[in-house]
Image (cartoon, rainbow, N blue to C red):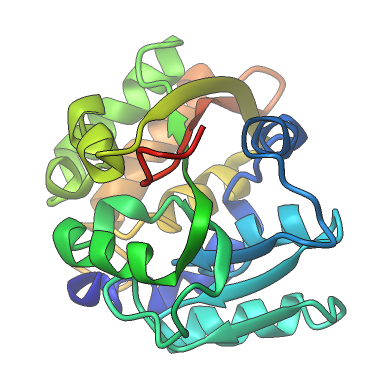
Length: 258
């Protein structure tokens, strides 16, 4: 995660405005599978970013500690979630959270796990989880082949986003994720999610991704031109739709847990 710490510094505003939230069904799933209770469950959200995933739990009454290495994103999370008394955010990373041992009943990593040094992060998650604690890895995974628009968006990224194929979280395999939970086990659950965008929203959603050339970077103007052409050809009533599979890997690291 340390290598990625600065990637989102100049994208915070777009991230806040245009990144998708998580369906309420995600929380219902975790409560059922891990027997979570707001009054007793301490949540640590690693790579909390601007607080999108943390708010899912805070809104339901959970106490959440966000761990975020990027100062700009951490400050934004603290500002946006200031009304929640049960939230605090610390400067830390998946490999070194700066939190005490056994402080979490649930560790969450939403749209973040693919940045981790997995071996070091696993040791740290083990350290901060209380006995019997749970782990949930979440992503909103764009469906690249679902529609002609999404096929075109994928092609645009591959053409103009230079390191897209290197940092795409969909490169992770189920086996790699399962190995992180071992000797415990995990199960994958899928939920449908979507966002509808006008042109401004589409551009902001694209620029919230760290692999897209930012304003002023080489290739930015070419990327925007290609994206605009795609929007004009595929928009219906001035809008396009991002369709997602919200992926939730849920389980424990403890083989003795039920």
